[in-house]
Length: 206
Image 1 (cartoon, helix red, strand yellow):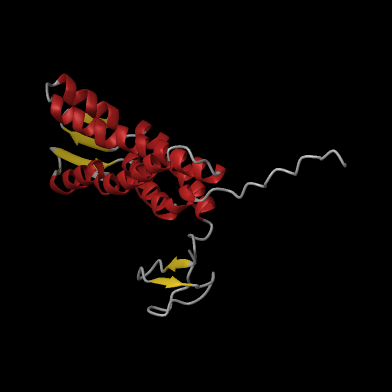
Image 2 (image 1 turned 180 degrees about the horizontal axis):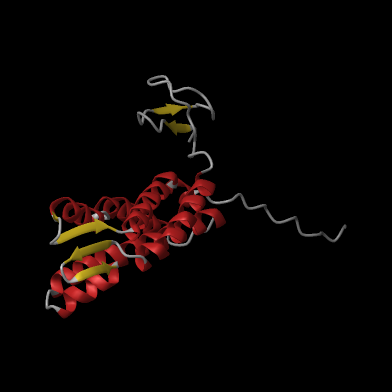
């Protein structure tokens, strides 16, 4: 339709060309986010790499009179489940394990489908991207809890809570998936590749 929206102020311009300046804020106009697929793939692969240490390395280290205990995300879930706190265990398991895994899988599907130019379930993919944008802000539960405990429980000689390496990896996963979601242009899901028309069939005169 010859329309380009500004990514900074959302003004829509008619008959604007790629690389022109927005008449309202002066930003460079692009029909689609530049290098969206490449940037999203890079951030997504980095998030997948950090997902392993986020779940295997300890996120919290507790030092007390009874010794030192290192807890990973899954060991914390098991502890709360065994102690009878089923709701808290389910909350941590969902927010800290399933949600990041879901975001990684959903981004992989969105980027792969957009890169291949597939028209498979375009409306559902648009809703999936909106869901990713909504749940992205609720992914820092573990980081908040560990930071709170590390700041409050500092009784030297009795109990000390420290953040482990795993929580840094988990925070990196959250940030990388959020950046990957921002780098991905959902409009690419509606861009179908130009299909060449079939060659004309030979006639009797040929």
